Amino acid sequence: MPKGTQRWEPSPGIRMCNGRLPDGTPQPLYYPDDHPVSPGLFKGMAQILHECGLFPTNRNLKAQCGNSLSKCPPGQSVCCCRRILYNQVDFKEQKLLLQELYESAGHLCLYYPKFHCELNFIEQYWGNAKYRYRETPLTTNDKEMIDNMRDCLDTILRWNR
Ligand SMILES: [Zn+2]
Image (cartoon, rainbow, N blue to C red; front, side, top):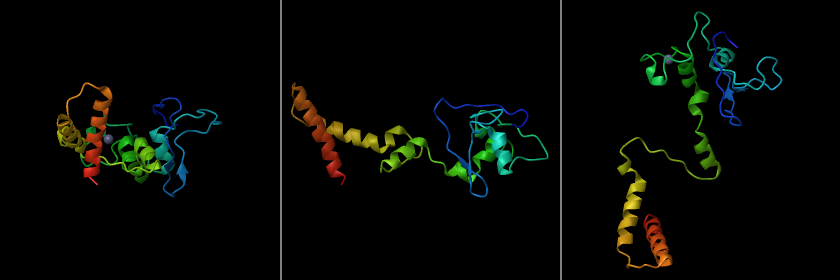
């Protein structure tokens, strides 16, 4: 492990998947369990960059410029370990765990761009469902209320097909 490297460990039982070396072979991000010094521990950003041949040999590199990538100087691509890793193809292509889970179940995972939450599709859906529910006959029967609510939600789904 390079001098000055900090150790970071994810929650127990949760491990990041392998990266990829420049030649395309998998790059484990953790030392092997039989490693003499750091068995099973996260290698750290500097070690990962060394293995990829991306760690600058002519100077030291800080772990990160601040608490987020936005703290890196504008236009810099080699200011810190975090920025260099962020720009690597295997890191860029890595999907979120939640997205991988959805897609493995055969679903499509869409992310909306950041905008006001009231413009989100689900708000239009809920708004329409509430409107339709207000049009249903009044009742104090729980089963009828649940049935009316389900009918309203189903009507919107049928209408959108
Ligand atoms: Zn930086």
